[in-house]
Image 1 (cartoon, one colour):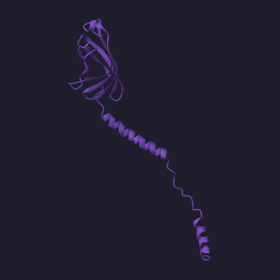
Image 2: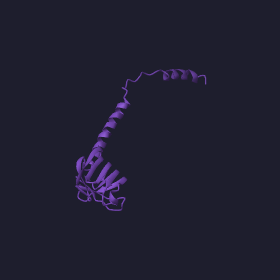
Image 3: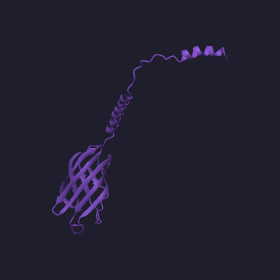
Length: 165
């Protein structure tokens, strides 16, 4: 054991000797993460833009089968395939008014969430009819016209509410 201690002491001194500092450049991980996120955002944006449906922004025609003439309805884009909708068709005491938001869920479906207010003199003597909530407008002609799918009003009559692009 006495012979082993003198041999171990020089070995321990050499092994405990402080080695020279490495001069490798430190990499900023925040910059790497930011560049990866920027690349991912660019890829995601290109994928989303390729999946977008027809742009419905602008002013279009709004018709109702019991209201003479055509009114106007405005689609204002608030997101990808999402719109704020506001419009009215009025003739004398008869009118239909649409307010809310809509989202294209397929080339044939426009999901509406808002209020449809109408007063038709032939329905309950012009009693105000208010429909709130989610409704579906669908098209069968490639997106030239969208017709309200749930068309029965509170008086029990079927309405033909059509948006012509």
